[in-house]
Length: 543
Image (cartoon, rainbow, N blue to C red; front, side, top):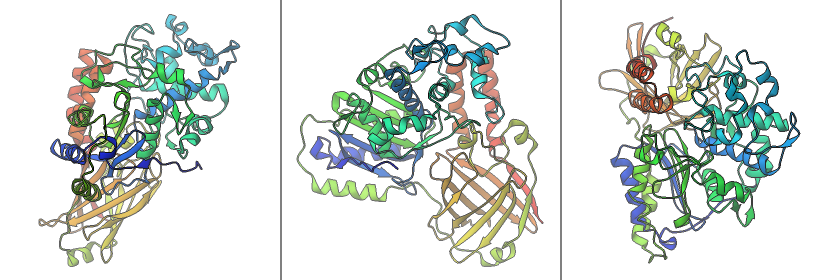
């Protein structure tokens, strides 16, 4: 376990930021409808503002999505700096190392070799110019990821075309393992995690235990800040050179033009798995607005974790306050406004279900009954059978859940215990749900990582039971509205953020990644039915 290292804390005013501007940022998140889970602002190496929206908490890691890519690229940076030997050539690993020289056996086994196989280099993959066109709908649980990447078609010559590809990052993790015999987590522990005081993170893997690279990493907010602070300071942290300075300089500068992107903060340039910001500096960036901004001009780092599908909204909220809020000099202390900020941070919370009157007779009638639920054929055909885990958790996971069944409610004084099975009874879970307006916390082991759950429920005036179950490490909460009618049960599934909003985001992302009008049009039509598939209404009967 890494030694705990924390930033020094200070008032915003002491580092040239008004407490009122932090409050303005929080108000902007609320006004713009952004589900912010946490934020942290570091200036001059000190944390001057931080908050976690309850039930989120500072000691619970948060999924990073593509923020993970910056860590995978950092591992390659270390490997190049250490001049790891490439066995097939005897040469030192470099930016110009060809991928086929790291995986000679897999390339030799290709059924249809391609002329571009001999041109694909580490440099191209870091710049998202591999030219690879991956199957976005491939079932990651059923394929060999390395072979899938190597056999994927090219849509352009490597080095000529900007094409964002998650699997480029996975191949860096696979390369580290091929060259060292270590997983990326094992490789990074003495080089990065330990010097930054980061406990080895959870990171989703393929079936062989190789980290997914482009997604699937989970980190605490302060650990995200340490990573970005280290990059902003040229690879130094707490007075020690941690990441090679040359690598930081190259990775964080514009390496390729990505102006073909749609959103302003996605078209300012791209480095080696880092994005450039339109306000200056650079960032690590993950889906649903997991942002780590490094602003060297202002000696500041801004971190957000969120459940906001439209990432530009989160960036717009940040940029509406910063960098204008940065002063070159300390500001006069403002005890009154600072006290207000402290109170706002203490009260920071996500919307939750209200405390409502209990229904003792109804609870007694359904208590401990087991409800069998009918499967939804469309959900199974699509690969997304109804699960207690929301789509953003299961989409690219090798751990497949779904087909909720054997739903059982056990009512207690101020809470209920909700039991259910998935995958034909292979998965059995039980979580507590608060019925007194307060969350109950539990554990969920059915996903790609162990989740901490916050569950809350209430009886509605129309006699239905509402439940919200949020895995705190994830971006989405599963919601359910349940109607009990004699021995029958109807369960309307939902999630937050809403699937309809996520579908809009996915269409836009698909358009950028594919750029095929016919395929994009097909995707638009397909995503119109996504909410019905992913948030179905389930029917069942007491057993």
